[in-house]
Amino acid sequence: MSEELKKFRNQIDAIDDELLKLVNERAALARKIGGLKDDGVIYRPEREAQILRRLQAHNAGPLSSEAVSHIFRGVMSNCRALEKELSIAFLGPLGTYSEEAALKQFGQGCQAIVCGSIDEVFRTLEANQADYGVVPVENSTEGAISLTLDLLLSSPLQICGEITLPIHHCLLSKQTDIQQISHVFSHNQSLSQCHEWLNKALPRAIREPVTSNAFAAQMIHDLVSTDGTFAAAIASKRAAELFNLNILAENVEDDAKNTTRFLVLGNHDVAPSGADKTSLVMTSQNKPGAMAQLLEPLAKHGVSMTKFESRPSKQGLWDYVFFVDIEGHQADAKVKAALQECSARASMLKVLGSYPVAVI
Image (tube, rainbow, N blue to C red; front, side):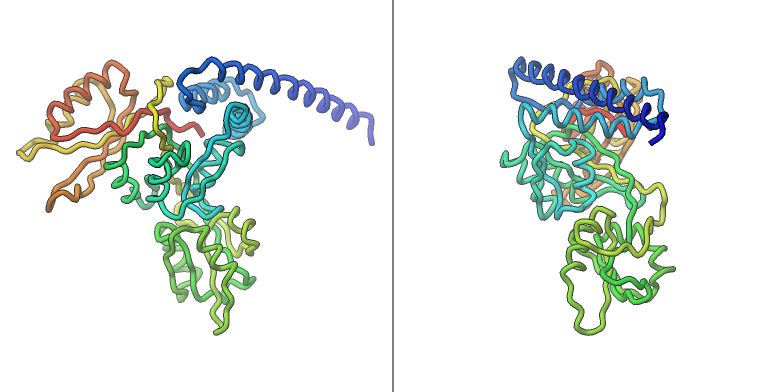
């Protein structure tokens, strides 16, 4: 070993020793703060968002902002676990993008509650069998997840946070030759996100929708072909590792910027973080110009609307509800004033939650 290499390694060892000391000092302070809380709430998304934004703003590199977030989410996750190991419900099995989103937001220091459906995530939280839940709400290519919106309308749960996750699909199989693939299994949204790639690479393969990408990978792992049928799954790299499958192709999504937005659901409100979003659902009165009048207070008070989505209310034929995202926290003066005026004009208005804007 050269003297220069030895010198650098010794410097790294010294830095690691100092990091270990500082991380434990941080953990001790976090434990003291936990002892001062009187509401039993361990996870503070607004505080964690503030920490991550501050660290990213001060980051001089060479680590990327995303890498800094990943490191400190892990630190915060393990500090939280000193107070309580949080349980997080998400759509399973292990290896779904919902699990990846949960890990991105909460880190490794949590208990996974694997659910068979999005409905089950809601039911698990409503029965207090998990602390938080992570559900997909929209994809940049395919749009809104209708089931999640419908469940939000009737659920008492609050939105506590959001997660944006770049989605990069892989074609997985026990086979090694892509030309042998005759069937492709995946969630219907993922099949749609890879539609053009499949048309070019596997034009004759039959596409089979299933409940989740990871379930598709699990099926391929368990599948025993007796008739010469060779199948593949569209799923994540993590699913390939979990189910010991070959990656026949990577990045098979049609849009390289393909991203899914997830919501964090819980049973408590979230305080302002300084960069927040508020989600609500409302209905307009049945009269000409009612929708324009309903939204007018947002413009009047300078509140920006970032999403507007209509869904059948299921209360009557051609009756709709409107899901709206706006910038700001419901406690902000201008947002509060706008919501009060909107509520007076609406047949129904329900605030689904105010929460920090996703941090990469």
